[in-house]
Amino acid sequence: MSSMKTALAAVALLTAALGAQAQSSFFPQESETAAAEAAAARDYLAAKDRWHNELAAFARADQERFPAPGGVVFVGSSTVRMWTRLSQDFARVPGGVVNRGFGGSTLADCALFARDLVVRYKPRQVMVYAGDNDLAEGRTPLQVLDSFARFANAVRAELPDTRISFISVKPSPSREQLLPQIRETNHVVSAYLNLLPNSEFIDIYTPMLGADGRPRMELFRGDRLHLTDEGYRLWHSVIAPHLPSPPPAPTAGLP
View 1: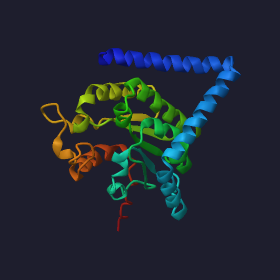
View 2 (view 1 turned 45 degrees about the vertical axis):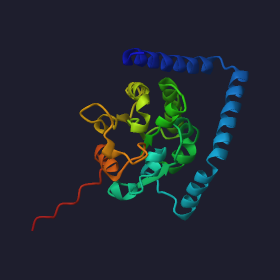
View 3 (view 1 turned 30 degrees about the horizontal axis):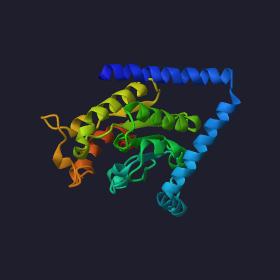
């Protein structure tokens, strides 16, 4: 499927979803609603069991020091989790940054845990990186888009003013066979974000490609999936301009 056809399909999907929501608000089907809520509850409980250790670690960190509201939350898969210098790299961001990455997670997981890992901290902005694990597990670009839409809706339902930033799926050498799906995913999520106020798509995919159009190997570790220090330096340079800036220093008064 061409990128244009994929984008049109994405718009059709979103339009149909919005239409269904509008219709259900006028003609609620209690049995359908109850079934959907029950399915969502089952998925959430299964995910909580699967990620028990990671969620427990976040809970312990919150007990030691609960993040102040108004900062920036980074959430997503192992690329976020393994960014050990995240706080230092963005030390000047007003309100600080919170790392809530959990390795191996999918965008579907992020949607299920939107309240647990984002909403409860009341951030001014959320940076989400996930999607490549979804594709590796066999989900389609439109299914990834649906997961992101669920994530964004969950955040906006309680934090209508929080900025939502999606970091594009990266071109990992170990998943080079998935590059067509990765490009489609980035394309449809970008198209969706064009319709979502106070949001943005951050293209990390393009600068991680070499002149030959293939992933730059120096940005990846030996597993050809996770980032080297050079890879994180690149990410920092691309992401930093999209984060809140510290207030200007006061100018000295005239003598």
